[in-house]
Length: 449
Image (cartoon, rainbow, N blue to C red):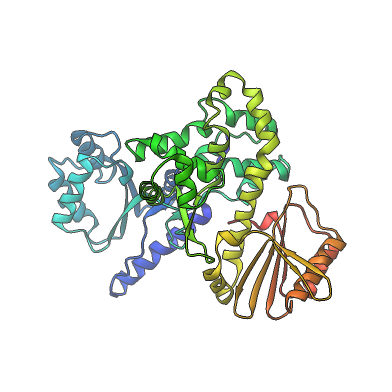
């Protein structure tokens, strides 16, 4: 079993908490920074809290999950109020205010399992008045698109996988990362001491976290989860418009649209506008969802009766269906995080419908090919994504893209070229990147987002 570190998330979250304390200490209007813990399903929110609590005495955590009113009262008094004996939630609220009225305190409440006891505490503390130096934070599950908030816990990156399973080669890491979506709740069953084949067989076992996580999510979210599986399955197969999805599943367009909006609200589906026609296009939020629908959804009998056949099916198709598309998304996240503010504005003009290769022919006969072109005015970002996991850049191949970029524009002024590779670049490629300030050779080791 592998475990991930949340050190960077803790630093970012702790900084936001310190900023909020500073604003109160200096008698400024409290700047209510959103300190909630939120992120995709199974991304490690509670493990993050466990590591956060180890060294921070002014932060507490309490979960109401599975507790009746009496047990919740008793446990809250023991964990938060130093074994104070309370009769009801109003008594607890008064004691809490007494203890924390003059010191900073962050109380993280597990609100994904609300019950009568949780409602009783919230009503009592709101009635009594939350102390000025106390902040109540919730645990929420939402779409990974809100990455700017300090309490966001992201699925683990390719670089995180390289750290926890260093004995595997890069190809295996890319495939396992794509299959699990970087979700610790799924990836926890991996073993750093095992080969890729052995780890893949673990994931594909009937009853594994890989098999069970998505059904559990839909069962918890919806009364009739079977109605949502067909829609997500069609999106995984490559149908991204409402009309295409509705036709495939046999739903009227308005009903399909209603279900898709529910999936978007749950953080399982995201939407982007197609600039060419204004229609929305729908995508699954995480590559694990794609993996599950490609390999488990209609293969559960095969998973039990003939696991070797399922294993062979995954090995034969995982690069094209899962690993390479997930790798491209890692490249896009890198660009989002690395480009400066001016370049970042280019993404207002970017849509997933335009990630298809762009083919142009210059008037002198030279042919240009880029995987993604993002433009605003005279500025352009040209992106070259890995086309295979084992692909390597030679002098001739890199020279082609440099020439293509210079044909498209000016590489030291209005054009920026990003070239991504799973494997290391040759010394010649690195030297060329030093000659052109807007040429970036990005190896897999830098895909930390």
